[in-house]
Length: 148
Image 1 (cartoon, rainbow, N blue to C red):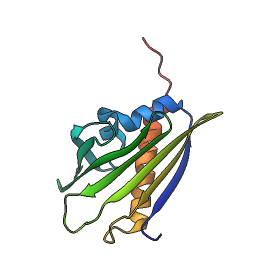
Image 2 (cartoon, one colour):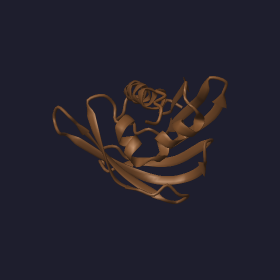
Image 3 (cartoon, rainbow, N blue to C red):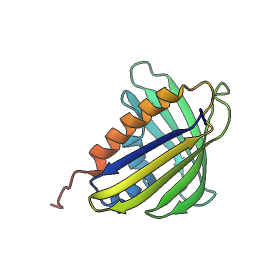
Image 4 (cartoon, rainbow, N blue to C red):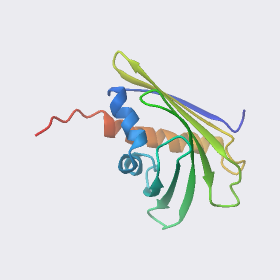
């Protein structure tokens, strides 16, 4: 259990908008990389058994790490389950990420779980990265911008 991270957030945005932020490649690179990182999507096939590949780039140093995985479960506006695996051999193993979306009175409740994190990644650093990413997600989905 020590290599598992669980997070919970409530966002003041409709579940469809929050789900879209997790399932649109352009949206993902805008909010998923923690502060100080850029993101690049190499490919993105949102289907059961479909795969994705991304790179996070440290803006200050240029150092990058790539990862990818496969979609295991997709229930629109309710649940995503997918694998993550780093290209770096020093970060072995397959992470299982589950994101659950629940419509609530004020918007959307999110439950995120990452299991089987590599031993080399301190759990508190994973929490910190997720907190930053979820802050960026909030800034993406909560504004209600009317069509012009």
